[in-house]
Image 1 (cartoon, helix red, strand yellow):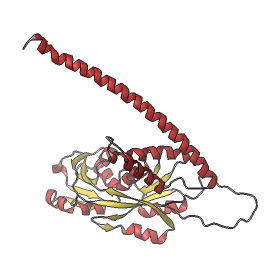
Image 2 (cartoon, helix red, strand yellow; image 1 turned 180 degrees about the vertical axis):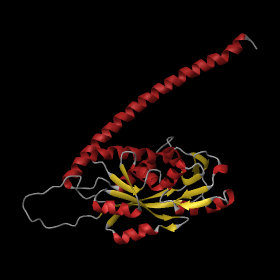
Image 3 (spheres, rainbow, N blue to C red; image 1 turned 90 degrees about the vertical axis):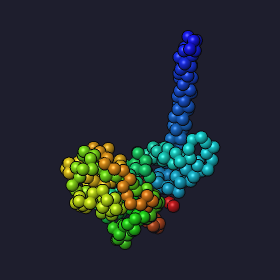
Image 4 (tube, rainbow, N blue to C red; image 1 turned 30 degrees about the vertical axis):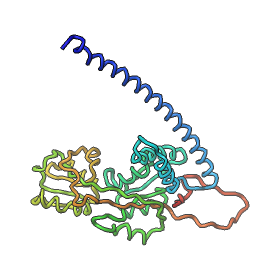
Length: 306
């Protein structure tokens, strides 16, 4: 090989690096333009919020948010993947919605449950997510106005309907505002991440049932115990080196656990349908005084559309 031939790869790499830096500069310029457009959008949303406040309209409008995503997907020319539009714009909508009013959402907590995951995916990072102890408490928080909205599981492809949710609908006065289907993927988590260390498996009754065949094959001798939630199970696993928890993969980060195995559910089409609930719409009443009366955003009932 001649000296010129041996030096060619070095020149090629140098030219490539120059081109990469040029392209990155263009990406930075595009990012700056996106940020400017986001701020323009935020100002428009703030104006909409002021109009809504004047007429007492709802901040959360699921049909409007769904139309935004559907329209953008339909008009997407690529190469940005259409599958990425919903999560990107969910966060944009969440951030700009917070300029109208911070929405408090009750869910079956604590952090790390599938309900928490559904709430986070549906409402975005800037919603105020409030974990409560039971599904009934989600309904109670919404009915009492401690949270404007709640999200509750209603049906799972493996285990069927969630009876606690159906019972609560019969006892509480709330509206169904929207729904979200969450793909349920269960992971086995422990402190060590070693299957041989597991003497006891703990989780909410539904994940235990959804992973029954896997547990029968891989951990036939391990005891099984029920917890109030997948998050409570993860907390116990974090304290007990012989205990493993079944729950969402992302709860490993929340509770400092290692992953023994992922996707251990018996059915790959395992999913749960969640319902978003809000307070009952106030009924119109005849005015009893000519003087107008207004209520603050903190006490005004949330009204759901769609």
